[in-house]
Image (cartoon, rainbow, N blue to C red; front, side, top):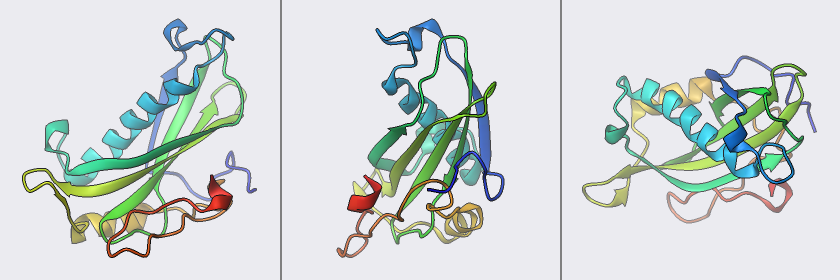
Length: 171
């Protein structure tokens, strides 16, 4: 596996997160569930930037899948740096966002996350194609999943416009 602590280039959104007492589990380190709100924050910051507004009520995406690989424990008082970038390739109606978390003090990569996002028309309750302007931005920002620390790129569904499903190697 390529060391995800050494990015091939800067990812589009980067943010720091303090590890608070609230985020600890019984083993006194960061609870695994604490990464998901951090991924949500990074996802919204990135995607709202693509939309050109900051109103989460106007989002046109829905989450089809979310996963996180826990690589190292994180202690109370630590500070994490999280990053997000789209993954290559994009689908017709869906795309994956990759997340990377590092301990600021040690530079140790603590977790890798992934969400599969579907562009969605909430009024009609149907998925829709990724708009051309957004597709261009997503493709410009996209990173190679293998270089980002994932062993294999996600396999694509054979259904028309299907949502990506991780291959056995990437689960």
